[in-house]
Amino acid sequence: MDGTVLVADDDRTIRTVLTQALTRAGCKVHATSSLMTLMRWVEEGKGDLVISDVIMPDGNGLDALPRIAKMRPGLPVIVISAQNTIMTAIQAAEAEAFDYLPKPFDLPDLMKRSSKALDQKRRAPKVVVAPRDAGDDLPLVGRTPAMQALYRLVARVMNTDLSVLITGESGTGKSLIARAIHDFSDRRTLPFVVAQAADLQGVDGPSALMAKARGGSIVFDEVGDFDDDTQARVVRMLDLLGDNAPRIMSTSQLDLSARMESGSFRSDLYYRLGGVTLHVPSLRERVDDIPLLAEHFLARGERDLGAVRRLSPEAGDLVRAYSWPGNVRQLENTIRRLLVTASESEIARAEIEQVLGNQPSPEPRAGMGVAMGEGEKLSASVARHLKRYFDLHGGQLPPAGVYQRILREVELPLIEIALDATAGNQAKCADLLGINRNTLRKKITDLDIRVTRRRKLM
Image 1: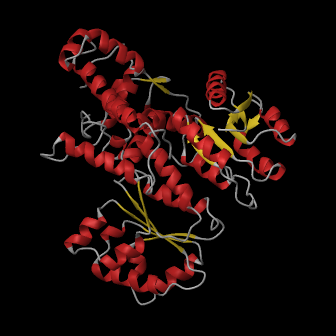
Image 2 (image 1 turned 90 degrees about the vertical axis):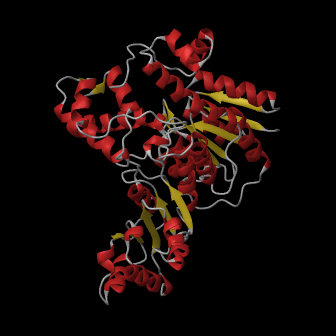
Image 3 (image 1 turned 30 degrees about the horizontal axis):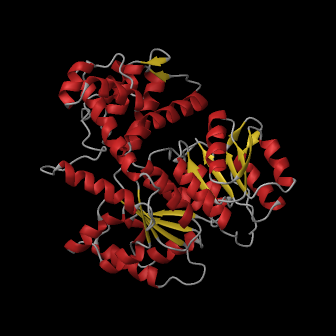
């Protein structure tokens, strides 16, 4: 690589690591913890590439992107952020960032993107729209690879005219994804219409729906449940789309391709709706996001209700271990109830068990959190997860380092479940796993596994 890179991050360790890596690669580096200093360097004409954090002591890196574009059209900016939400990814794309990476980022991947940014001439600058206030209302939070890949794909399709099919289990946030695509797109000032089968009944149903949308967005909610007549109405409606047509999105918790093969869903409708398919993973598929979501809902409760609550270590262990068959919706409802019913500021494990009541008990998660079907081998379950992970990258290869990331995602829950099963006894756990006790200790440290006050799941 060749060029000067401006690095802005309030974390000294990150500044040091990036400075060393970029210098070894042949770049000159200017690093700062101040957004004001970064903007001064940009204004002075320094730098061929900017790598900037979002939250800085003296400002917001995303808010600075339009000013950078105005002062230095064509200067590529790579945004790095610990705010691992869909809004950060969308705002970065909306503000014309060259690229966006969540923290913790993969250093070789960042170096590869930096090289591409330095080598590639920027296209002619467009009018930059200042990022909108994201707010905290959408619980689309996640740092796992599956969620980050989803955020990137959402940002790429946001301002296209392609139809979007959003799939996933009940409670995963499919409707929130559709709403985010509309609210952060060029159609944001136009109507957002959610349509059920009943809205398409009658001679005037489809035309009334089109008139209501007025070039905005129409979302067919749970389209997999539409009967044959309703499906036919949707096909005819889509065939008549002309100028000022609305953006078409649909959601389904059913496997539409399987229903199409069985003859219960029209193939012509399937291909009209599936311009781009976005799969929203279940909580079982992104276990590491569960504590993050719980913290998000607790913080929202503090903001909305004035209720300051936190989870005890034992309660946090249960929240992470629970299977959450109702996904994000169930987790949110559970936290909202605890915000009102908890007797102390620290929520105890027993209080969560009481709220969960007769709901399904926590289940050990096979492999990387994918629930195996009856009689399904572990290898088949893992293969499905891996294929979905690759598919989520929209035809592009995932970031480098897949092997180690997958091993870590298998290793972490395996060791945690084994520790739970042996009540935290590391000698027994090592015997159970068939590894040396010193090896187990090293893995516990490397994977940052908490082993205090650990007990068997009830």
